Image (cartoon, rainbow, N blue to C red; front, side, top):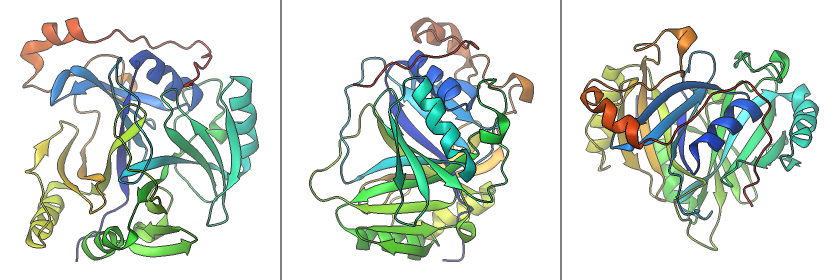
Length: 322
C-alpha cells in the first residue's frame, strides 16, 4: 500500500465523572485541556480533549465521560494501555510527583529494554510514562507544579491485546503500511514514521478473556493523515481490499473515517487539519463549551444536561479508582 500513516493522531477513551477526569489529566499528568465539546453522536455527553499547547497530532488524549458508566474489563480485542513520552531522565521526578499526590505507580522494564512507570487513571485505565531519549516535542508548560523539563511530551504508543497476532499484524503491515520493529515473548511492536515516539503500536498476547469496552477502557485509536485528499485515497484503498470503512465524517477539528482491525479494536484515520484553533484563539483553548454549527441551535438544551465542570489551578488530591 502506497499510503502510510504519519503516526498516532489521538486516543479516545471512556471515563466516568468528568470533573475527576479533568483534574487528573490536567493536574496529575499536566496535559492541557484543549477543547470542551460534546460527542457529536450523543450531544448529551462531554467530549474532552487534552494535549500539548496547540493540541498537535500525536499529543492528544480524548474522553467521553459518562458519570454512571459501568466499569470495563481488560482483555483481548481492546487497546489495553496508552503510553505517554517523558524524558528518560525525568522518570525519578515522576515517581516522586505521583507518590506525593497519592497515585499508586510502579517502575517497570518494557520488552524493548526501556523503562516506564505504570499507573492507573481514576477510572482504572492503564497508563504508561515511557522514558524516551531524543523526543524533541515541547509538551505543555502551563502547570506550575510540573516543571517544563519534566513535562509529558505527547503520546508514545498504544498496546492492543490480541488472542491471535497474525490477522492484526497483517493489517498493520500490509494495509496500514507499518513495519515490524521488535518482537519479544508474547509481544510485538510496529512502527510508523521511522519508529519515532508517538508513532508506535504494540501487540500483547491475551487469550484468557475477551475485554469489555466500558468505563476505564479505550474506545478507539486514531492514526494521522496529513490532509483530506490523502485520507480519501486511504479510504478507497481500504475499501478495495475488502475492509468495511465508514463514510468521511466531519469532526469539526479534523475529518475522520473508522474501521475495525481483525481483533476487534476500532481504528480511526483523522486529518491533521484544520486543528483546534478554528473556533477559539490558541491562548483560550479549552476554556468554554464549543459546538459545531449543526449543534449550535441546541446550545441551551445541551448545556442544561451536561454535568458541570470547573477548571482550577489548585493542587489535586487523587481519588482512587479502587
